[in-house]
Image 1 (cartoon, rainbow, N blue to C red):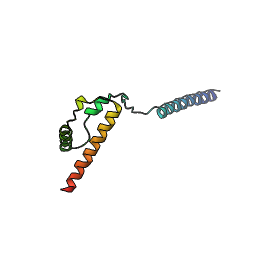
Image 2 (cartoon, one colour; image 1 turned 60 degrees about the vertical axis):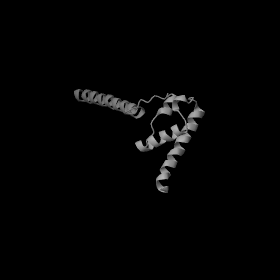
Image 3 (tube, rainbow, N blue to C red; image 1 turned 90 degrees about the vertical axis):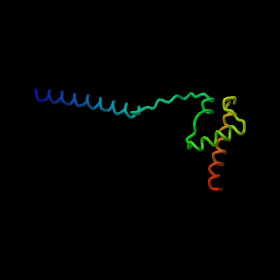
Image 4 (cartoon, rainbow, N blue to C red; image 1 turned 180 degrees about the vertical axis):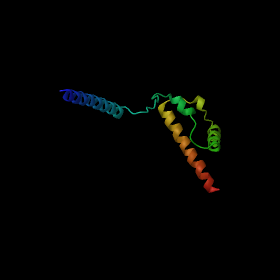
Length: 104
């Protein structure tokens, strides 16, 4: 009798451990271990002033070109259409300055 009771208790203990491990695996699979907290809200005006991932000299050339065209980012109206056009202009200027190296 004692043998049977001890085996039953061992099996119940193993079942509890297995259920705990399964639930832990389920939780781990459902939630990523490292969650990046990124705010989804950003002001459009912040995108006008954000630095681009280009070299410092290219950044200076871009700033000089914008100032020679009398474009002041502080005076631009931060709407989606203006921001899209401004980003298109910056992209074109970067392409032109990049191609300028090969023309000389």
